[in-house]
Each structure stands twice: as C-alpha cells, then as structure tokens.
Length: 251
View 1 (cartoon, rainbow, N blue to C red):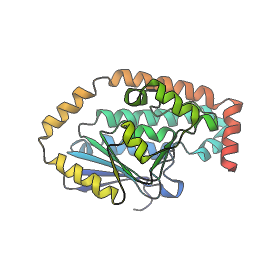
View 2: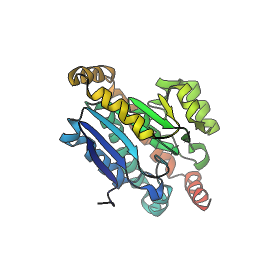
View 3: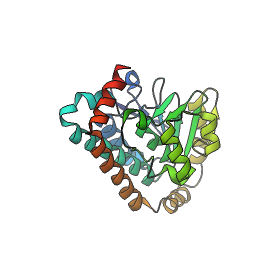
C-alpha cells in the first residue's frame, strides 16, 4: 500500500523504516508518530541487526505540521500534548532500540524532527540538507530534544545561539558540529546501506551491549523530554504562538 505513513522494508537483516508523507514534507502528525512507534516496537524490527531510518520525498521532515495545529486550534493543548508526547516516545524508542540506527537526511529538517537524528547512532546527510529550528519565528518552545539532547553534542552555548538566531545549518556545518557523520553528494541511501550492511556482519551481542552501555541515561532523558513537552504545551496556547501559526501558514 502506498498510503501508509510509515513503511517497513527489509534488506537481509537490515530494517529500513521510511517516513511516507512526502506531500507534506513528512511533517509530524500524531498518526505518523504512532505508526513509527509501532514499527520501532515491533518484535521483528527489534530483532534487526541495523535499522535505517529514512524519508520519502524532498525533505526528511519539517517538524510538527503547523496545519495540524491550526486545524486543532480549539483543542490545541490536548493536540500538542499528544503530538510531543508521541515524539518523545519515538525518541526514547530509538535510543533504547537494541540495534544501531543510521538516519538518512535530505532536504529540510526543522523543529522537533531533529530529535530523530539526535537519537540515531549515525547520520548520513545529503549535501542539500539543512537544519533550522524555527521556534523563535513561530513562537513555540523547543521540543524534540533541542534542550534535552542537543547540548550534549554541541554544548549549551552553541545550542542557545542556534535557537536564538534561528540559524540554518547546512550539511557541512552539521558535519563539523558532530551532528552528521557523513555528507554525500548523491545516493545517500546507498551510503547508509553500505554502513548498515557492514555493521550487520559484526557480532550482534557486542553491538547491542555497547549501545546499552552508551544509553544508560534513558530515565533522565525521559524526564528532560517531559520538561520540553510541559513547556511546549504551555507556550503553544499563548496568543504569540497562535498568531505565529497563522502568520507562518499564510507564508
């Protein structure tokens, strides 16, 4: 079926998970995140040697779909609580997955979708890929690990500058910052699969143990993500955020 929001395919022992909402640049809605969480928690996927997380279309994902917020304006608190809660569950599922995760990124990454990269073990970016927060423009509070995960990678001050300036980082800058591990001019999927197949040939028990030892702070991360959700929900109901949604959609 071509209408599934998340697709699961296999290449040997490598699970390939694809976000499949290209007509909306794979913007996040509860249905997509629920499907992604179900795939990640499926026993077959948990038995994979490596997981490749990718997306169909021009962009990896442009964060929470602002059209969804606008359409759920009358119940925006409940909608935001569900959406960010599901995103947090997906991030935790990625971090606690037994198999290493390689994320393939093309086009735009904005807002909370960054969390999918931050929770992965390897990020392969196409040369055209960019990451932009957009929170300070719309009037939202950061979610998706911007405060819970990102400072551990690039530092607190760098994170604050990025959020405040709403800077657009290209793939080369992401590589220099440690947010990406490989930048490819073309055939990003092939580059990711080459790494995945190489890792899949290694001893799975050793890889899983290494991943568990590196991700011992899951409980702390859960608390930090929940703090992001609380702040997001409080801010999204403000007039500033509501006006920001309308203004951004009119663009």
